[in-house]
Image (cartoon, rainbow, N blue to C red; front, side):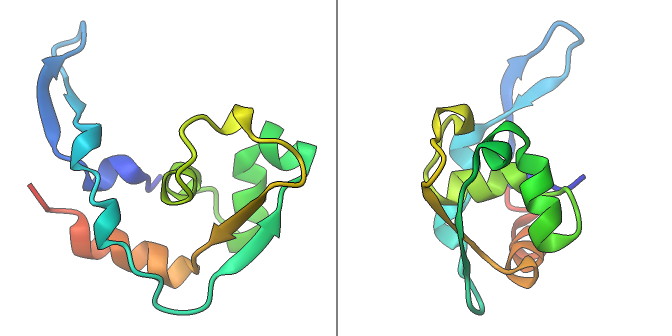
Length: 105
């Protein structure tokens, strides 16, 4: 599953299994560029309860839900309300962003 963690560096902080946590500050949001038209979506209650279903409805995959929220400056998606609008980049733009930024360290 592709997500924002694919483009983050690791931090020095470790979990109880000794794995390094990703560094959220390293997420290169300023590098994102929508290469083509974006899609505006008005959220329903179902979209908020099941964001992966919204992503699947738009892109026919369940990846990138976390990136879509980050790119829309949403810190905690359950705080969203029905009727709010999100701007969704194309799948092409999301995939290119991952490919171009995957190894930024």
